[in-house]
Length: 173
Image 1 (cartoon, rainbow, N blue to C red):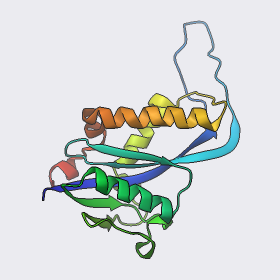
Image 2 (cartoon, helix red, strand yellow; image 1 turned 90 degrees about the vertical axis):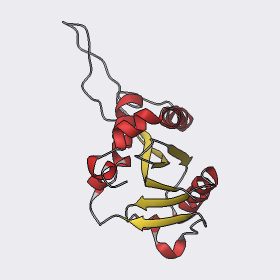
Image 3 (cartoon, rainbow, N blue to C red; image 1 turned 90 degrees about the horizontal axis):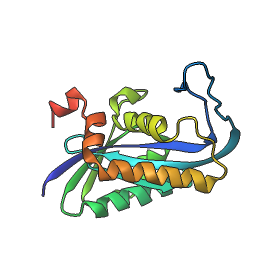
Image 4 (cartoon, helix red, strand yellow; image 1 turned 30 degrees about the vertical axis):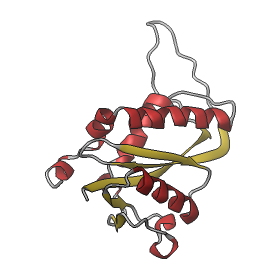
């Protein structure tokens, strides 16, 4: 059974935005909306830096139950492979609360080390390319845009690989 090494993380997306610098014609000042509405959803993502294969799910909460749904889905998507899932120490990853699929083993990154998880770069890229200076009229609009972004990374593995293939990972896979 081939081994697939994946890094996993979750990110919160919602209706709070932070205006960023943007281009506008010389002599004009861009108008960018801002809103603070405390509604959120969560993207769960796992990426294999070796080939850029990515799996995402959008779930309404960040809990161990939701994490179990995600792990089960990833395990089913990669039935013929054994997955080493590397993730951070988030509370929803507590070992006693997770049902790890049979074709999967999990490993926790050291505490307070987000720079070791390449999926953090996916979230940064996603926020920049899909969510920059956008005001959403509803949570449905947020979920639709998040779905578009997730499908983009799943469809274009070269993009995901270019963002997540850190030298120390490439040298050791």
